[in-house]
Each structure stands twice: as structure tokens, then as C-alpha cells.
Length: 437
Ligand SMILES: O=C(O)C1=C[C@@H](OP(=O)(O)O)[C@@H](O)[C@H](O)C1
Ligand SMILES: C=C(OP(=O)(O)O)C(=O)O
Image (cartoon, rainbow, N blue to C red; front, side, top):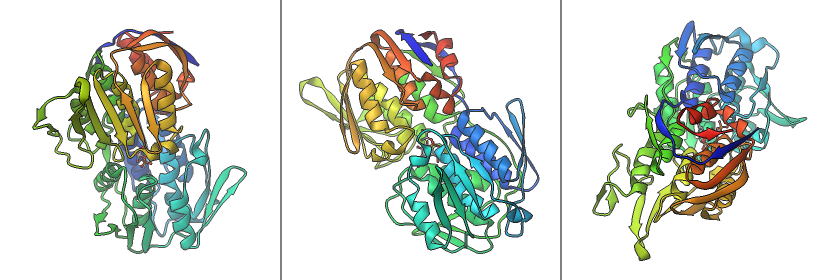
């Protein structure tokens, strides 16, 4: 599907969709649990549909009633009869979270499974799991494009890299409590996307599951049971970031329904945006309103010729790169460097090269290195082109936000990919006065 945008500023009020990251976690916890859980404000993005489908295949009952999901837990645990059933077939769509969260879960609950996916999913790296699983005697093989796991996930020490994806750690945090002995997750490198692990621990706690930080990672007692729960999914800070970016570059969008106390790390978009706007400054340093400290506290420096440069370490919040890039491209006399971003090459697209290609086509000046982007702020972009979404929801949304400040119309090819995380994105864009066909 092509969407053509006639540039104009957006105005109005919007509540972003429910958090995809939180919804995945709540659904999995409820499905593993005992009894009936109710989850409210569940939106059926393609990624969430994948997790729902997979948890049903693993043995839970999931029934949608409007935006409420009624989940009958499978009572997973060391003595569950589910372990005797045939290997489940888990279609993860394009969702990296679904695949990586459920690989150890399927091992713990069913002794393995056959995982399939679409788009770039099956090419995304799984080596940290493979190394760990093979060390534990679990077989991991690609067969006709499917990933087949089989074996027993034994409790004990689980050594894992922390700089490929935090999703591996989340998967283990879900599976290890179900084993019949205690475990420790030992992180062998720097941990990136750290707040996503904190979000996991936050959800687990609500289901009565304990995981405590250790000097090397997390200690996870075995023999735990997920208890049923009733929760409402919070609004999504990663999606809110696109609307904050729109306002940052001249639109007037009021973002409603956001929880400032959320465990979602992407709420730091508020601090990053403030830094980009150059306010408020305190001796040249931004004072983070959300109490964040290095490394994610951005640094702003004054440059020659009246320009400023903002440098942000994005390793803690990679999903903020596309909205921040759109914001940076139209930041006037401010240049934005997004560094420590190598992991973005392993998402739905190679997001660093996709951001560079799309923003450059729209008329921005962007330089790309192996692990960073520098975007040189302008007052306006030229537009007048067709850009490719690269089948990446966050790239399509970035282009749509940047288009609000182009001189000529912008066509986004493959615009339907927003359904991966934000099926109503185009509807919401229109409701804010966006002119799209
Ligand atoms: O745990 C999660 O919900 C996510 C973790 C992040 O991935 P990485 O840990 O691979 O960076 C993020 O990019 C992804 O969109 C969602
Ligand atoms: C990378 C993303 O998700 P996942 O890893 O779950 O596919 C995303 O939503 O940007």
C-alpha cells in the first residue's frame, strides 16, 4: 500500500496505542499462570496477535472480548502434563519479541517447538541462545526455514551476552521460574536495552514471580507459579515518541494517557526532546526530569556559526531512534548525533541505513557510521519523492512525521507495515488533520 502525504502540520489530541512491550509480557505471564487473568486495553497489532496465537498453541486459553483478553492459564510447571504433548508449531509472524521470549518458554513448558516467522525475523540473530542451549545439551536446528528446538532446559547458571538483544534475558526470566531448581542469569558483556529487562521484572512481580538482581545478572528461584492477575495495558511510550517528535518540529499534538511512572524506558523521549529543544539548560547540562543519569543523559554543546550539537547514547532505547531522527532532521540549527546504535541494524530492517536512506531522500543531511547517525538539522525538507518503508513500521512512521515539514508531497511505499505495532497509525494521523491518500 502506498500512502501519499500532502505536507501540513498536525494538530489535536491523541492517545497512543497500548504498549506492545508491556502487552507481550502480560499475555505470556497470564498464559503461563494458574486460573483466569483479565487484561484490558489489548490492541491487536500483528506482533501481539503472534504472541496470542503462540500462547494458545502452547496450551493456554485466550478469548478476546472487545479490547479485553480473558486468559485461562496453562499452569505451567515442572509436573505439567503439557510436557508430554507433541512439539508445538509457533508462528511468530515478524515479532522478534515473540520468538525470543518464547524459545526458552517452549523448552520449559513443552520440551521445545518449531518456530517460524516472516520478513526478516528468521535472519535476526539468535546466537546467544544457541550457545547457551547447546551448552545445556538442547538441539537447535534450522529445518526448511523453521527453527526447531528440542531438549530439556535444566536449571543452573545461564551465561549470556547482553549486547545483542535484551529479549534473550526476558525469555529466560520467563522460563527459569518454571524449572525444578534455582538458576542465575550471568551477563557476560555490557547490557543494552536495560530498561526492557526492568519492564520484564516489573511485570513478573505482578504475577508473583521473583527474580532478584545479583552481581552478575539475576537470580531466579525455580519451582515458582505465575498467579492470575487483572491488569490494564499502559499507553506506549515508543509510539508516543512519534507524536512528541511531530510537535517538536512544528505540529501541535497533545499526547494524552501517558503514565510518567511507567517502567517503559522509552519515556526518556521527554528528556531527549527537551535537550533537542535546548531547554531548560543548567550550566550547559540538561537536568533530566525523569531522574536519569549517564550514559543516556544527552550532552549538548555549542558549535561554531551559532549551531548546537546534541549527542545521545541510544543503546538503552533503540526504538526511539526513528522518531528522534525525524525530529533531528528538522531541528533547525541543532545537529543530532545518535550513537551506540549498532543493534538497530538487526531490527525489522537495517534501521540505520533505512533512516539514512529515507531522510536523505526527503532532503535531510545525514551521515552514518557503523554504529551511529548524525543528522544535521534544517528548517524544512524538500520532499517530492517516494520513499520505501523497508517493511519497517518505525521507518514508515518516521517518514510520515518528517513529511509534515516537507515542501512537496511524500509517498510512502509499503505503508501497511505500521500494523506490526500501530494498526491505527494512519487513522490517527488523519484525525490530527494529516492529509493522506
Ligand atoms: O523487550 C522488548 O519489548 C523490546 C526490546 C528491544 O529490543 P532489543 O533488546 O533487541 O534492543 C526493542 O528494540 C524491541 O522493540 C522491544
Ligand atoms: C524491533 C521491534 O520489535 P521486535 O524486536 O519485537 O520485532 C520493534 O517493535 O521495533
